[in-house]
Length: 290
Image 1 (cartoon, rainbow, N blue to C red):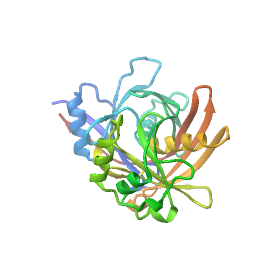
Image 2 (cartoon, rainbow, N blue to C red; image 1 turned 30 degrees about the vertical axis):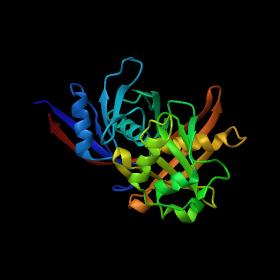
Image 3 (cartoon, helix red, strand yellow; image 1 turned 90 degrees about the horizontal axis):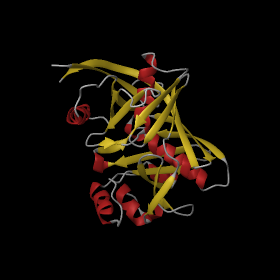
Image 4 (cartoon, rainbow, N blue to C red; image 1 turned 135 degrees about the vertical axis):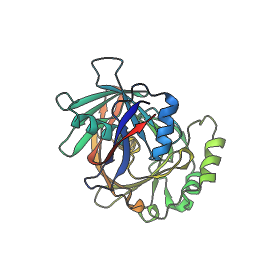
Protein backbone atom coordinates (compact mmCIF):
# COMPACT_ATOMS: atom_id res chain seq x y z
CA UNK A 1 0.00 0.00 0.00
CA UNK A 2 1.28 3.50 -0.77
CA UNK A 3 2.46 5.57 2.18
CA UNK A 4 1.88 9.32 2.49
CA UNK A 5 3.72 11.61 4.89
CA UNK A 6 1.87 14.33 6.74
CA UNK A 7 2.68 17.11 9.18
CA UNK A 8 0.46 19.19 11.44
CA UNK A 9 0.99 22.82 12.34
CA UNK A 10 -0.75 25.37 14.54
CA UNK A 11 -1.49 28.48 12.48
CA UNK A 12 -1.94 32.13 13.49
CA UNK A 13 -0.01 31.63 16.71
CA UNK A 14 3.57 31.57 18.00
CA UNK A 15 2.71 29.02 20.70
CA UNK A 16 2.18 25.30 20.25
CA UNK A 17 -1.40 24.22 20.99
CA UNK A 18 -2.71 27.68 20.22
CA UNK A 19 -4.10 28.97 16.93
CA UNK A 20 -5.85 26.79 14.38
CA UNK A 21 -4.74 23.23 13.69
CA UNK A 22 -3.92 22.09 10.16
CA UNK A 23 -2.81 18.79 8.64
CA UNK A 24 -0.73 18.98 5.44
CA UNK A 25 0.10 16.18 3.02
CA UNK A 26 3.10 17.65 1.12
CA UNK A 27 2.91 15.04 -1.66
CA UNK A 28 -0.59 13.71 -2.34
CA UNK A 29 0.10 12.30 -5.80
CA UNK A 30 -1.92 9.12 -6.30
CA UNK A 31 -4.65 9.92 -3.78
CA UNK A 32 -8.25 9.80 -4.92
CA UNK A 33 -10.81 12.47 -4.08
CA UNK A 34 -12.55 9.99 -1.78
CA UNK A 35 -9.31 9.26 0.08
CA UNK A 36 -8.62 12.97 0.57
CA UNK A 37 -12.11 13.52 1.95
CA UNK A 38 -11.84 10.46 4.20
CA UNK A 39 -8.51 11.65 5.60
CA UNK A 40 -9.90 15.13 6.27
CA UNK A 41 -12.80 13.55 8.15
CA UNK A 42 -10.42 11.28 10.05
CA UNK A 43 -8.17 14.14 11.16
CA UNK A 44 -11.36 15.96 12.19
CA UNK A 45 -9.73 19.40 11.89
CA UNK A 46 -11.39 22.40 10.30
CA UNK A 47 -9.25 21.78 7.18
CA UNK A 48 -6.65 19.41 5.76
CA UNK A 49 -4.57 20.18 2.66
CA UNK A 50 -3.22 17.97 -0.11
CA UNK A 51 -0.35 19.21 -2.29
CA UNK A 52 -0.14 18.19 -5.95
CA UNK A 53 1.99 19.25 -8.93
CA UNK A 54 0.83 22.52 -10.52
CA UNK A 55 -0.85 22.71 -13.91
CA UNK A 56 1.45 25.62 -14.77
CA UNK A 57 5.12 24.97 -13.93
CA UNK A 58 5.50 28.68 -13.13
CA UNK A 59 3.47 28.03 -9.98
CA UNK A 60 4.60 26.13 -6.88
CA UNK A 61 1.79 23.62 -6.45
CA UNK A 62 -1.85 22.79 -6.81
CA UNK A 63 -3.36 22.76 -3.32
CA UNK A 64 -6.64 21.06 -2.52
CA UNK A 65 -8.37 21.99 0.74
CA UNK A 66 -10.94 19.74 2.44
CA UNK A 67 -12.98 20.39 5.54
CA UNK A 68 -14.68 17.54 7.38
CA UNK A 69 -17.37 17.11 4.74
CA UNK A 70 -16.44 18.86 1.47
CA UNK A 71 -13.72 20.42 -0.65
CA UNK A 72 -13.27 24.18 -0.29
CA UNK A 73 -12.38 26.66 -3.05
CA UNK A 74 -10.08 28.67 -0.79
CA UNK A 75 -9.30 29.08 2.90
CA UNK A 76 -6.93 31.23 4.91
CA UNK A 77 -5.14 29.22 7.59
CA UNK A 78 -4.63 26.22 5.24
CA UNK A 79 -2.72 28.45 2.82
CA UNK A 80 -0.64 30.09 5.54
CA UNK A 81 0.18 26.70 7.08
CA UNK A 82 0.80 24.89 3.81
CA UNK A 83 2.99 27.72 2.61
CA UNK A 84 5.03 27.55 5.81
CA UNK A 85 5.43 23.75 5.52
CA UNK A 86 6.55 23.86 1.89
CA UNK A 87 8.91 26.75 2.60
CA UNK A 88 10.59 24.62 5.30
CA UNK A 89 11.10 22.02 2.56
CA UNK A 90 12.87 24.60 0.37
CA UNK A 91 10.07 25.09 -2.13
CA UNK A 92 9.70 28.86 -1.80
CA UNK A 93 11.39 30.96 -4.49
CA UNK A 94 12.67 34.25 -3.09
CA UNK A 95 10.31 33.74 -0.16
CA UNK A 96 7.20 33.39 -2.35
CA UNK A 97 4.95 30.45 -3.26
CA UNK A 98 2.03 30.40 -5.70
CA UNK A 99 -0.81 27.93 -5.19
CA UNK A 100 -3.40 26.92 -7.78
CA UNK A 101 -6.80 26.55 -6.10
CA UNK A 102 -10.44 26.36 -7.15
CA UNK A 103 -11.00 30.04 -6.30
CA UNK A 104 -7.93 31.16 -8.24
CA UNK A 105 -4.22 31.69 -7.73
CA UNK A 106 -3.09 32.30 -4.14
CA UNK A 107 0.26 33.98 -3.49
CA UNK A 108 1.98 33.18 -0.19
CA UNK A 109 4.84 35.36 1.04
CA UNK A 110 7.02 34.09 3.87
CA UNK A 111 7.50 36.33 6.89
CA UNK A 112 9.80 36.10 9.90
CA UNK A 113 7.05 34.52 12.02
CA UNK A 114 5.06 32.62 9.40
CA UNK A 115 3.40 33.71 6.18
CA UNK A 116 1.13 36.24 4.53
CA UNK A 117 -1.39 35.35 1.84
CA UNK A 118 -3.23 37.44 -0.70
CA UNK A 119 -6.86 36.42 -1.18
CA UNK A 120 -7.50 35.21 -4.75
CA UNK A 121 -10.50 37.44 -5.49
CA UNK A 122 -11.56 41.04 -5.00
CA UNK A 123 -14.41 41.63 -2.57
CA UNK A 124 -17.93 40.87 -3.68
CA UNK A 125 -21.11 40.91 -1.63
CA UNK A 126 -24.48 39.22 -1.90
CA UNK A 127 -27.53 38.44 0.20
CA UNK A 128 -28.34 40.48 3.31
CA UNK A 129 -30.00 39.12 6.43
CA UNK A 130 -32.01 40.50 9.32
CA UNK A 131 -30.65 41.03 12.81
CA UNK A 132 -33.24 38.55 14.06
CA UNK A 133 -31.99 35.81 11.71
CA UNK A 134 -28.35 36.16 12.74
CA UNK A 135 -29.23 36.59 16.41
CA UNK A 136 -31.06 33.25 16.28
CA UNK A 137 -28.07 31.57 14.63
CA UNK A 138 -25.67 33.01 17.21
CA UNK A 139 -27.84 32.40 20.25
CA UNK A 140 -28.08 36.13 20.93
CA UNK A 141 -30.84 38.72 21.00
CA UNK A 142 -31.55 41.11 18.13
CA UNK A 143 -30.38 43.98 20.37
CA UNK A 144 -26.90 42.43 20.39
CA UNK A 145 -26.57 42.85 16.61
CA UNK A 146 -25.25 46.21 15.34
CA UNK A 147 -26.80 47.27 12.03
CA UNK A 148 -25.95 50.98 11.98
CA UNK A 149 -22.95 50.38 9.70
CA UNK A 150 -24.35 47.51 7.63
CA UNK A 151 -26.85 44.65 7.87
CA UNK A 152 -25.53 41.11 8.23
CA UNK A 153 -24.27 40.41 4.71
CA UNK A 154 -22.86 37.63 2.57
CA UNK A 155 -19.36 38.54 1.39
CA UNK A 156 -16.39 36.80 -0.17
CA UNK A 157 -12.81 37.15 -1.36
CA UNK A 158 -12.74 33.48 -2.39
CA UNK A 159 -15.11 31.67 0.00
CA UNK A 160 -18.43 32.94 1.38
CA UNK A 161 -19.18 34.17 4.89
CA UNK A 162 -21.94 36.18 6.50
CA UNK A 163 -20.35 39.16 8.25
CA UNK A 164 -22.20 40.44 11.30
CA UNK A 165 -21.16 43.16 13.76
CA UNK A 166 -22.10 42.60 17.40
CA UNK A 167 -21.75 44.53 20.63
CA UNK A 168 -18.41 43.77 22.33
CA UNK A 169 -20.08 42.43 25.47
CA UNK A 170 -22.21 40.04 23.40
CA UNK A 171 -19.38 38.28 21.57
CA UNK A 172 -18.41 35.94 24.40
CA UNK A 173 -22.08 35.01 24.96
CA UNK A 174 -22.60 33.72 21.43
CA UNK A 175 -23.64 30.06 21.28
CA UNK A 176 -24.58 28.75 17.83
CA UNK A 177 -27.92 27.09 17.16
CA UNK A 178 -27.54 24.54 14.35
CA UNK A 179 -31.29 24.38 13.70
CA UNK A 180 -31.42 28.14 13.18
CA UNK A 181 -28.43 27.94 10.81
CA UNK A 182 -30.21 25.28 8.78
CA UNK A 183 -33.46 27.21 8.70
CA UNK A 184 -31.78 30.40 7.46
CA UNK A 185 -29.73 28.57 4.84
CA UNK A 186 -32.72 26.62 3.57
CA UNK A 187 -35.23 29.47 3.47
CA UNK A 188 -33.18 32.31 1.98
CA UNK A 189 -34.02 32.65 -1.71
CA UNK A 190 -31.02 32.36 -3.99
CA UNK A 191 -28.78 31.36 -1.11
CA UNK A 192 -27.05 28.05 -1.75
CA UNK A 193 -23.97 28.14 0.47
CA UNK A 194 -23.68 26.25 3.75
CA UNK A 195 -24.00 29.18 6.11
CA UNK A 196 -20.79 30.28 7.88
CA UNK A 197 -21.28 33.18 10.30
CA UNK A 198 -18.41 35.53 11.16
CA UNK A 199 -19.20 37.72 14.16
CA UNK A 200 -16.96 40.68 14.89
CA UNK A 201 -16.74 43.34 17.57
CA UNK A 202 -14.70 46.54 17.37
CA UNK A 203 -12.51 47.27 20.38
CA UNK A 204 -11.65 50.69 21.85
CA UNK A 205 -7.98 50.26 20.85
CA UNK A 206 -8.88 49.73 17.18
CA UNK A 207 -8.37 45.97 17.18
CA UNK A 208 -11.08 43.45 16.34
CA UNK A 209 -12.33 40.42 18.26
CA UNK A 210 -14.12 37.77 16.23
CA UNK A 211 -15.77 34.36 16.35
CA UNK A 212 -16.69 32.15 13.38
CA UNK A 213 -19.38 29.46 13.47
CA UNK A 214 -20.08 26.96 10.69
CA UNK A 215 -22.00 24.04 12.23
CA UNK A 216 -23.47 22.95 8.89
CA UNK A 217 -19.96 22.09 7.64
CA UNK A 218 -18.99 20.31 10.86
CA UNK A 219 -17.02 23.23 12.31
CA UNK A 220 -18.98 24.30 15.38
CA UNK A 221 -16.46 27.08 15.97
CA UNK A 222 -13.16 27.90 14.28
CA UNK A 223 -10.08 29.00 16.21
CA UNK A 224 -8.68 31.25 13.46
CA UNK A 225 -10.34 31.85 10.11
CA UNK A 226 -8.01 33.56 7.67
CA UNK A 227 -10.44 33.70 4.77
CA UNK A 228 -13.22 35.18 6.91
CA UNK A 229 -10.93 37.82 8.35
CA UNK A 230 -9.52 38.71 4.94
CA UNK A 231 -13.11 39.15 3.79
CA UNK A 232 -13.79 41.31 6.83
CA UNK A 233 -10.79 43.53 6.06
CA UNK A 234 -11.94 44.07 2.49
CA UNK A 235 -15.51 44.74 3.59
CA UNK A 236 -14.57 47.22 6.32
CA UNK A 237 -12.42 49.14 3.87
CA UNK A 238 -15.28 49.19 1.37
CA UNK A 239 -17.44 50.96 3.97
CA UNK A 240 -14.89 53.75 4.34
CA UNK A 241 -13.43 56.41 2.06
CA UNK A 242 -9.88 55.20 2.68
CA UNK A 243 -7.56 53.60 0.11
CA UNK A 244 -6.11 51.05 2.51
CA UNK A 245 -6.51 49.74 6.03
CA UNK A 246 -4.95 47.33 8.53
CA UNK A 247 -6.26 45.61 11.65
CA UNK A 248 -5.09 43.18 14.32
CA UNK A 249 -7.61 40.42 15.03
CA UNK A 250 -8.07 38.18 18.07
CA UNK A 251 -9.94 34.88 17.65
CA UNK A 252 -10.21 31.50 19.37
CA UNK A 253 -10.02 32.86 22.92
CA UNK A 254 -13.34 31.30 23.96
CA UNK A 255 -12.11 27.93 22.64
CA UNK A 256 -8.87 28.00 24.61
CA UNK A 257 -6.87 28.37 21.37
CA UNK A 258 -6.00 32.08 21.22
CA UNK A 259 -5.04 33.30 17.77
CA UNK A 260 -3.64 36.54 16.34
CA UNK A 261 -4.20 37.52 12.74
CA UNK A 262 -3.00 40.59 10.89
CA UNK A 263 -5.27 41.69 8.05
CA UNK A 264 -4.96 44.40 5.44
CA UNK A 265 -7.07 45.69 2.56
CA UNK A 266 -6.39 48.04 -0.30
CA UNK A 267 -8.33 49.44 -3.22
CA UNK A 268 -7.16 48.38 -6.67
CA UNK A 269 -8.28 48.59 -10.27
CA UNK A 270 -10.55 45.54 -9.91
CA UNK A 271 -11.94 46.37 -6.47
CA UNK A 272 -10.90 45.84 -2.86
CA UNK A 273 -8.21 43.22 -2.26
CA UNK A 274 -7.13 41.76 1.08
CA UNK A 275 -4.29 39.92 2.80
CA UNK A 276 -4.00 37.97 6.05
CA UNK A 277 -0.82 37.04 7.92
CA UNK A 278 0.25 35.18 11.03
CA UNK A 279 2.66 32.77 12.61
CA UNK A 280 3.05 28.98 12.38
CA UNK A 281 4.31 26.38 14.86
CA UNK A 282 5.08 22.72 13.95
CA UNK A 283 3.38 20.08 16.09
CA UNK A 284 3.26 16.52 14.67
CA UNK A 285 4.49 14.45 11.77
CA UNK A 286 3.72 10.94 10.63
CA UNK A 287 2.66 8.61 7.83
CA UNK A 288 -0.59 7.12 6.54
CA UNK A 289 -0.91 3.91 4.51
CA UNK A 290 -3.76 3.84 1.98
